[in-house]
Length: 282
Ligand SMILES: [Zn+2]
Image (tube, rainbow, N blue to C red; front, side, top):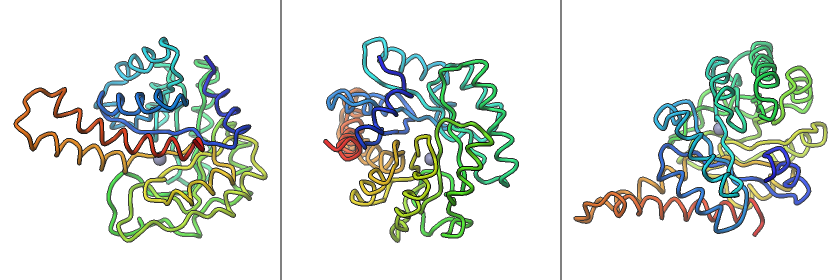
C-alpha cells in the first residue's frame, strides 16, 4: 500500500485533495472509513488532542491499523497538537502524521517548537510527516457568532513568510491562513483567498493543507484545490450531522445502541461522502 507521502504526490498529479475528517469515537471512525471504502479513495482520520484523549491514543492507532491490514488506505493524523510533548507522544505511537500548531505564537517561537518536533520525528519515526501552521485561524470546531478575534486579512500568511517558515523548520506539510476559519461562522464564512493560495503554491514545494473548510462553499473549496490545496480538513460539519443523527435515533424507543447510534453514522456518512466526491473530483 502507498504511504501518505505517496498519496500526496498522487493527489498533486491528479490535482485533487485528500479528505481529512476528525472523529471522537468509533462511530465517527466507522462513518469515515465506510465512506472512503465505498468511493475507493484514500482518507485521513484526524484526532485533535481532546479527541484522542477521549478515544485513546493507542486505541485509535489500532483501529486504523486494522483497516490498513485489510488494504484500505486509511491514515492517522494527530491534529492540532499544541505542545512538543504531545507531538512526541503521537510520534512514539507511530501515527502517519502530526500537526504541531504554534500558529498563535510569535514566528520565532513557532519555528523553534516546530523544528524540535521535526527533528524528533526524523530520528524516531522517519516515515512520519510533520505539518506546520503559520497564521492564526481560530481554534475549536464550533458554531461562531462572529469571526474569532485575531483573525483578519492582515493575519493571512504571506508567500515570503511561508517560504521562510518551511526552510527553517523542514516540515513536510504546510497549513497557511488564507481566509479559512476553524468552526462555522453563523453569519457566513469569510471567502477563501484563492489568489493567496496560488501565490503560496507557486513558491512552496510541499503540499498545502486547508483547515477549517466547514462552511465554505463547494465552489470555493474546488477553486482552492485547483489553486494548490492537497488536503482539506472537515470537522464542524461532521459534528453537526452526527448530533442530528443521534437525536433522530434517540427519539425512538429503540434500546440497542447499534441501532440508535447507526443514525448518527448514517448522517455523518452523507457529509463525508459528499466531501470526498468534491475533493477527489468524482
Ligand atoms: Zn484545523
